[in-house]
Length: 285
Image (tube, rainbow, N blue to C red; front, top):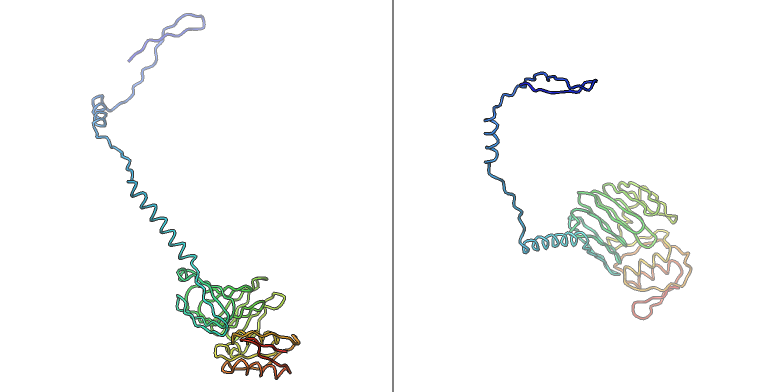
């Protein structure tokens, strides 16, 4: 194919010239191209439809989601509290079959429906724990936190006093104020001193620690007000104390004795006297 073209020279005159021939190879014929395009045009169209849910089904799905969230929230945050009154001991079986023995005037709180996921509870008072092996078991108290996997131990957490005694296995104790950590093995005890520091006692007499479980009460150089508080707790009585608060008591007694017999035992050894008042009240001086 030849094309005639003109160009303007430097002198302003038109000059005749030709582009060189270009031979472009094209292996597809016109008929084949048309056939291909016709085939594409004849293909059926794919219709895209938008599907809208019936309003009833939308409401049902939304209600199901709300119900599911509500059940999950209930299981997660529902709290069960078990407490003992003065003069009462109680044995509690937890959802994982671990066992707690609660001393008088103590309480535990936990989430029963969430316990298989997180074995965590709080304790105020005194309790003995026998924990089934499993995932982490955590006991939180005001002054510290105790963590185990499977073991037995005793926790005393009242007012400013906090101590943990390991009977079997291993127990990790963390102080809340100083964030100190102590790992206990059997017959060891950790306690928090008056400055908030965690201290370790090795080879503690575990028979003395567990004596309350056998309705025996053992005191060694204990301040008199703590001894009287324990008597109040175990016998559900009120004691008005009017004497030297620096006195200490060493001795033991069984709960098989009456409250008057116990008071007589303690007061006689310290040169004190007690007097029964109205109801369940006593005066010690």
